[in-house]
Amino acid sequence: MAARPVRRAGFDLADLGARDARVDVVPAYAGADGVHVAASRAAGARGPVLEALGTGNPTPGLLRELRACLAAGVPVLVTSRCRQGPAVPVHGSGGGATLAEAGAVFAGSLTAPKARLLLAAALTACPEPEEALNRIHPHLTW
Image 1 (cartoon, rainbow, N blue to C red):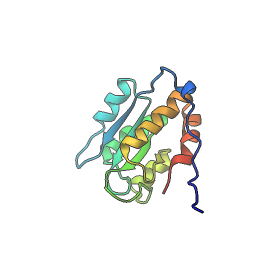
Image 2 (cartoon, rainbow, N blue to C red):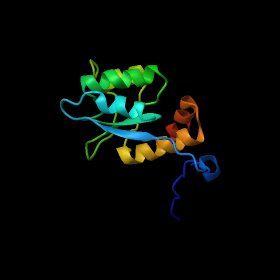
Image 3 (cartoon, rainbow, N blue to C red):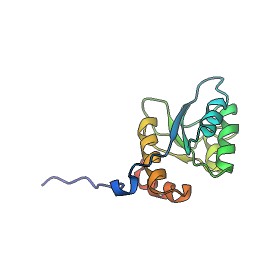
Image 4 (cartoon, rainbow, N blue to C red):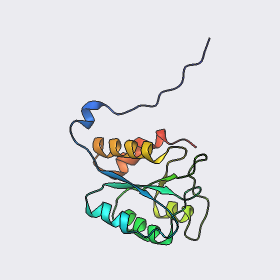
């Protein structure tokens, strides 16, 4: 007898309808400032997904803009740009732990494209950011 994988509750297609919440992927790289994050917000993005350095670290410029997003109630999902290993809030003093303290949610082992689809579906189905984040938490694996 083989064990069946446990399927987490997904999203009802009726909840998604024709609506589409804009969620942009923001890459982190040496010297990245927050211009991409600010431009995404100005264009109507309802939540950025940070493709962070290492285990989930932003640059100082990205950190500044992502904190502004979080302060404005815009959810931020953090992934790692590394091929293996989860995004986890390890480093303080401007690193991932500082982002987590500001309210960012770490996506664990999800890649940025998968995290973007998950956050977009959640924000489409649940207009309130806090409710959307509650919907995605069961899908975030470490």
